[in-house]
Length: 243
Image 1 (cartoon, rainbow, N blue to C red):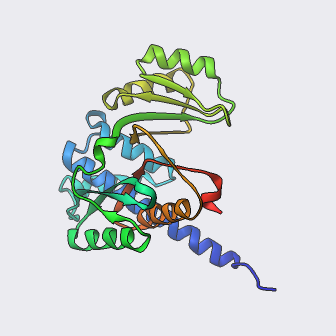
Image 2 (image 1 turned 60 degrees about the vertical axis):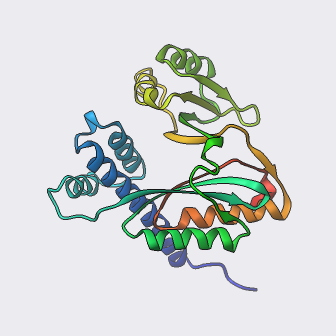
């Protein structure tokens, strides 16, 4: 009977995954600071990136160093924002947002991923029209639905979605209202478990069986690439897709 991975092996794998998360957050902090300045008070994108870093237990020193590199106080790397669009198996639309210092490497890695799992890279605009940018504040099951709904409406949220299968709640906002709604919810002692401005599909497409498993493998592979910041799709996946 074979043994499972050692404690050291599991720790190394966890550390590697955490390192990738930190790398992605640092790149986002860097690009946000370079684009909108190093003051999070006047730069909502930077403030969101900093919050993401602190939530991932990233030290303030690491975040401040990334900001200083971006604003020229320290020598840093120039990152470029690139978006790729394509299709996964089953006609699933996929958006891949990247921050890279080497476009040639990034497009090769992304194209390889699509080809490896039966998808194909598309042209600019080929799938983006199927998605909308939206602010999402997520609350775990057991949260006070009435209090969240009342506070969200008063704060100017667009919608409140309750998921009957587990009782989780999403508050949806326009992107430019995201920070104000989030601040109002926190002030009302309703701290979301997760909050971000993201892209959501107008309509999800259900996929099953081997097709669903291939979609999951493609999405996971893309998310694991160093240059990839975020991956969005319109796939509706059941639990069997992860089996």
